[in-house]
Image (cartoon, rainbow, N blue to C red; front, side, top):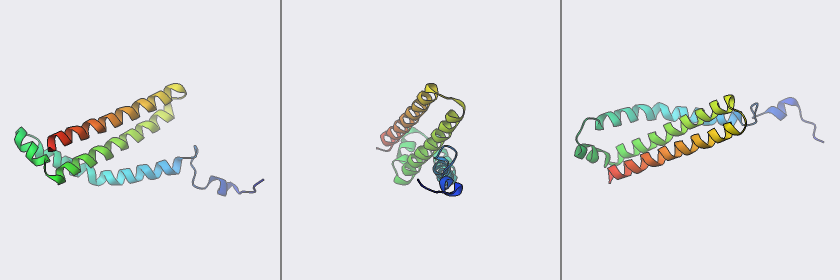
Length: 123
């Protein structure tokens, strides 16, 4: 038998036992998005409106391709985690679990398709 105080049992845990970890993940993701979103907008905006050859030449350089790839990953994962939280809060049972799997599959498919398109454009 362990004699733990209430504070010691609850330390580092949210109501579901993972609240602190999720909070830190979302905090780090939000901080990364502070830099990623403006870089994404400027990078995408610069390539917008050009001919195919100009856009291909622009994204064949390493910096724009890396910015676009990292922005795609960070933003999509952040939205996926937020959607998971909404589903966990409002949809219960098997339907909630299936929705979480569907959202995860859609998000990772979106990331894979975006990175594939970026590699095709860059090469």
